[in-house]
Image (cartoon, rainbow, N blue to C red; front, side, top):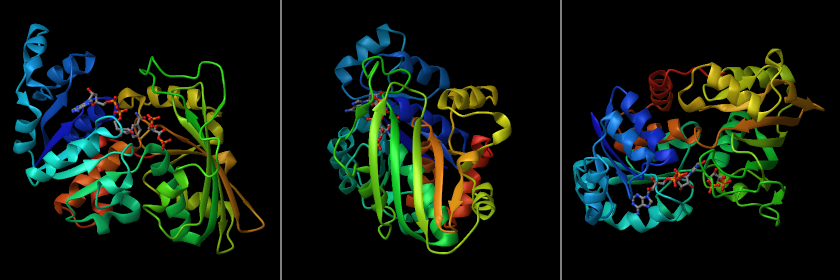
Amino acid sequence: MIKVAINGYGTIGKRVADAVAAQPDMEVIGVSKTSVSAEAYIAKERGFPLYIADIEKRESFEKAGIPVAGDVEEMIKKADIVVDATPGGVGAKNRPIYELYKKKAIFQGGEDADVAEISFNAHANYKEAIGKQSARVVSCNTTGLVRVIHALDQAFGVEKVRAVMVRRGGDPNDIKRGPIDAIVLNPVTIPSHHGPDVRTVLPHINIVTLAMIVPTTFMHMHTVQADLKKETTRDAVLEVFRSHNRIGLVTKATKITSNAQLREYTQDLGRPRTDLWENGVFEDSVSVLDGKEFYCFQAIHQEADVIPENIDAIRALMGTVNDPDESIRMTNEALGFVAI
Ligand SMILES: NC(=O)C1=CN([C@@H]2O[C@H](COP(=O)(O)OP(=O)(O)OC[C@H]3O[C@@H](n4cnc5c(N)ncnc54)[C@H](O)[C@@H]3O)[C@@H](O)[C@H]2O)C=CC1
Ligand SMILES: O=C(OP(=O)(O)O)[C@H](O)COP(=O)(O)O
């Protein structure tokens, strides 16, 4: 069993911990928090040993009824691999301690690409990641873009991509973020950072991205346009998406045309935390004009789509599974999901 520590048990970290615990070949040996919060009680309920960044705070945790297993350094020593899910930029500050103890480490998309040896997406570059000491799972928006672009590129070749990200203002539990009533051009400059981030995984892709932030929390919404190299049809593209295990199709029959309805759907499906781990491509939006001009809308659940990618990154870095398709299959099966 691969011994996994999750440093930063928050929105992403708690989902990674549950996903690790579901896998047949890995186990959670500890999670970390900086202060007592609701998630600390969840970690206790799940039976995950809780470590804390500042051991001086042990008393505050124990007064709150939260047993403390030790400090973060002790957790790191016990692990084979650390998933760093601390706030953006903190991972880079934690990297030296992972290096000190020669522990493999996985970082998240809030870190700069140079935090790790490779920027990772299971479908795009799993094999290149095998055996590496560190990887960065690219952010939710980049993960969603890489999945659809890589699928199109493999099937038809991609000349260039133009994409607009309509991003959620914050996560449902982000009570300090907004906007409340505005469409914020973010960034106002073009291109946004997403295009270059896609190229950290798919360096050959000619891509320009634009982004804004709007008052929603459930999911991001992308418009993706790609010029394809080979002539194709809408049906052929739909077949590619239907056979992809992390691209889901929001079908016409569901009458879903929004992130809110899609979240209700994942809730009714019984997904843990209503998580949509796959891309949510709107079937009716998939278009191919003049044989080579592809368009679609896709919803991206920011809290969820990077989670299976973290699991595959663990296997790749540990070198326990060399076949990407086998790891992806194992991950999805253990999470109990088939793309919608
Ligand atoms: N929330 C989202 O929608 C997405 C976030 N990400 C990335 O995932 C990473 C984590 O983001 P979230 O989970 O949203 O953050 P979060 O704020 O929900 O959780 C971060 C956790 O790290 C803990 N923490 C803070 N400083 C720490 C330290 N020095 N040592 C140990 N633990 C510490 C906090 O207590 C908290 O539990 C960031 O890089 C972010 O950019 C990526 C995709 C989507
Ligand atoms: O929007 C996101 O990343 P992005 O920078 O790829 O757009 C992710 O949801 C995480 O970033 P945030 O939670 O800091 O907005």
